[in-house]
Amino acid sequence: MRGFITLVKKEYLGSIRSKKVIWLPIVFMLMTLTQPLTLYYMEDILKMGGGLPEGSVLQMPVPSAEEVMASVLSQLNTLGVLVIVIAVMSTISDERKNGSLTFILTRPVSSLQIVGSKTLAEGSIVVISFICGYLLSYYYTVILFSTIPIQQVMESMLIYSLYCLFIVVCVIFSSAILTSNGAIAIVNILFFSVLSIAGSLFSEFLKWSPTELSNHAMNTLIDESTHGLTGSILVTIILMILLLFAGARAVDQKRV
Amino acid sequence: MSFYVRNLSKIFNDQVVVNDVSFELEHGRCVALIGPNGAGKTTLLKMLTGLIAYKQGEISFQKAKEWKQDIGFLPQVPFFYEWMTPGEFLTFVGRLSKMDEDLLSRKIEEVLTATGLSEVRNKKIQGFSGGMKQRLGLAQAILHEPALLFLDEPVSALDPVGRREVMTILSNLKTKTTILYSTHVLHDAEEISDDILLMKNGEIISQGTLEQLLSQASDVFEVESASSLPEMNNFTINLIRPNKAEVSFKSIEEKKQFLQWCVDQDINLVSFQERKQTLETLFMEAVKP
Amino acid sequence: MDNTLLIQLLVPVIILQLILVVTALVSLKNTAYTNGPKWLWVLIILFFNLIGPIVFFIFGKRGRRT
Image (cartoon, rainbow over the protein chains, first blue to last red):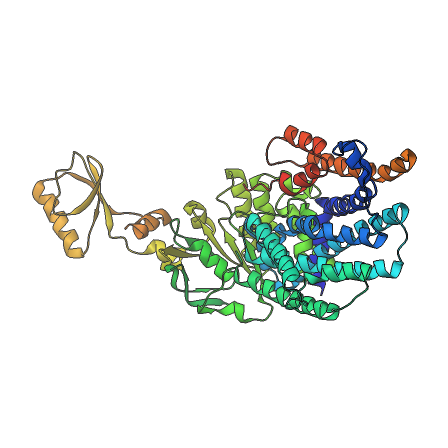
């Protein structure tokens, strides 16, 4: 246990020294708050762009506050995934490439502790960053549109946090099996885009897929339907545990 | 307590990198692993430290449950978390090695002093020179007082001063720790090693104590005459100067024949003596194709 | 357009941007070895909103092997 705590502390210290604990939350906040802002000022933006003929009356349906929050999540599905992937991708691969992993592997710690410590540290930083961004965009939405019951916001936030954690676990697993950071980034971005597209095409067949978590998070905001939610959560948690063990195995087999 | 390695082999992509290696490490000995580039020294050390998995063979000390507590390893090119300071790094690895906090802080002082890094203990590693990193690598390897110390080329990257310092540290450790280290610097190996393992093409081709190896009767003799030596086609010779040559004999008969031949040719011999063995001549002899 | 509201809304954005840029510049100053010249990174951090600092944090620093 002391070994695990030592490893977790080292991960946090590394993230503090690399300023990841500062830039990742800020990037999430900037990404999420632009959504309510642009939606609110959409009309003005279009007018300023001068794309509208003189005298034309623009009929823009004003989105509901729930729809605005859902659009925040939908934006995170692309940009957010990208940011998480590049923030986490090098966590194991770089240490193996430059040789610093050697000093951990020749000490009495298990590979599960190594992968677990990285998952805990990176996962918590990513989830807290997401929560910062999500709450800030909630604040903007309340000011610019209308208020939403806090319970709905919290529910969608928890569901989406689990999705963020799942992304982190996937990226850490890829970092354990692949060497090139470029390859890790491409594989993960492709994986998540293909899975979410497939999820929308075969929604019944893939209703328990982890990428459906983001849809569930949006649904809790808009229509409060929870069809398939429990299944998705269970499948995601089981997959995370499997990936954790598989990642540890990969660290063991591909040591140097 | 002695350690042994038996019939250890490793195949990488159909290439035998370590081939049926067996040896023993006696407690408290300093063992030099020498051999040309590509002999498999680094691979062997990585197998011994658990960095490379193996299917064939036996490594005695790896059978203990917490064996990693008892080994220390210095890789050939040590690379650290550049954002850490030596103090932080040693605390980190010491805790991983399950050291007691009090002992750890005492040992950190000790190894930082021994490796001459006390002054920079709170500086970031990112500004360190290669020699400083090498010494920090040595510091982390000896921090937890391991029973077995594996060092991959501990002195090759250092300047003569740094090399001398590291050699002194190693000599002091010899009493407590069993050391196995690979090196290219044969002169240093001769100075502090008790035993030698000579490796070539993945195999240990020669092993023994330094004295044993160096006292092995040489079959090479140095011949010197007052004037230039004539052609000696009947013998395996290596002309060093016109009047000086090394001759190797396959048998005593051949040696007698050679001396007879010298008499017949009326060569004015100045000296004829067994060439003195050094680790270098041994090494050159062994790695000759 | 309600300008005071807009300003109120934009102030947090500007503050966040500022923290990000300053953090990136301080980190650049303390980095001994960067990928590419430092002055180029200063320009990238200053003139590419949001993207510049992120790119620096991820690709800017270089671990040096001796």
